[in-house]
Length: 337
Image (cartoon, rainbow, N blue to C red; front, side, top):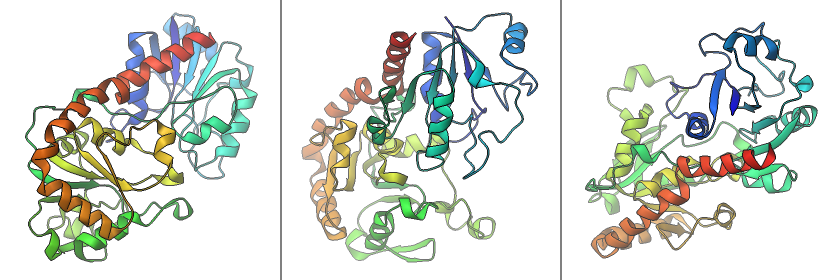
């Protein structure tokens, strides 16, 4: 079957989860990509023009994560387009993205088009309607090395505070405070109780004015490439993770589990909504001091847990990889055509 994927081209973006969901669908469908940044994109084309250009009829349309504008309170598109989606009769499947931005506007748009199914990576999708399907994030098993020796004790990579302040929490700041002496965004020295542990802490800042000047001394200001990110996860025994904006379980949870890390995360009931097995490689803590107590327990006795951790890791490929997620998406599309 022929599918038209409408999206902006984020193929070269460091962490392009959009492609992680849609690229595996090539196994099941003949997919043509169209949108800003893709070759042959023409903002004067309507659906008929696209079909004439590619000399094929499309059986359905997939609207990708980035096709609609992410600008708050802005127009539905931030580029010129002649596609009149509310007049298109063939089935449309929609990836809802960043529910903390423009959710009401996007839901109103979905009602106007011939949408058969909406995929969301947030647990609130269960309450949005019968055509909404909850597909959590996953990990790229092509970037996982299951045989690598783990010689890093603790790993963290991410911003310390999301810019959408009302949708964030302070756990990252509190744990950084527990581990490091610091100044502004710079970690200066590990505190005594953590001195014997090897820690990779990458609290990069997209907007830091100090990047170009101090980046040579403070590598944590720079975001890791995807390859190096997965490599560092693979080397690490513990990955510190928190909920993302809008209390969402983000990609890092699944990437850490797939990489064979113990995921250390603040205690909450939300994980159960993502069908995470809390008995397998997930360690919840109730406070900063509890975090430290459990770090010491698991790192000082890591050899006693290692075989179980590795066994659990192998099961996660079938549960949480993007290839596995794509099978779920394929089955939903097939059911709704």
